[in-house]
Image 1: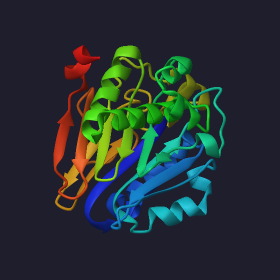
Image 2: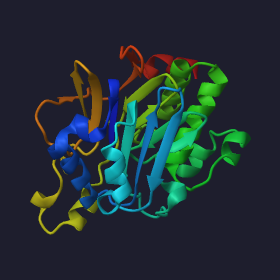
Image 3: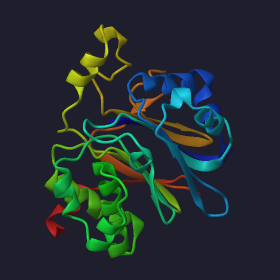
Length: 269
């Protein structure tokens, strides 16, 4: 259960520049809940994808603040982790998960984890390092991309199979690929962690914005120089809600947006 922020821009920008000082402070303040680590991925002009992560709280880690203020790339994502109960807080479970120029950060929980792992081929299972559902989600997406030979088709088929097998799970995620960013907002039948949130705060008014009412919501903002997407909690004007149960892909070079329709391929599975 985590927070996400992603961007695709015309020129290299930093998260702090795009969000503004108030926006970055508001996003980082979500560590009041999401304090079990942070991670970021960015795609550079030489065609490589880089990642860095830590199991420390972003609010307590100077490296996080440094990276948020560096104009690293024209495309990137940031993740703040709130570990699902029972899963270890450590480097092996910290998002984003990375393999061969692909990086994924997930907000949600796919259960049962054993059922998700059953969808993996032996090579995909052998590549696992941690014990999270999120890493298995990532490996399944990579597996489907490899099997289809196409990023868009592979992600679409992966989402369709996951919707079919885990209809009550949140698949919210950002996937940074070599030439595209995928923004996935599929969660309408998932149960929010309201009880756990209430247990963390003495007063429900202290819970971060929209966490108690729209935990899995995502918003987007399109400006002349950028396309951005963020999980609920930022609570600033200028953002538009992402429609329920949608997934889109953004071309990193042209910034053109294409909607994915995993439901349309369910009959093929």
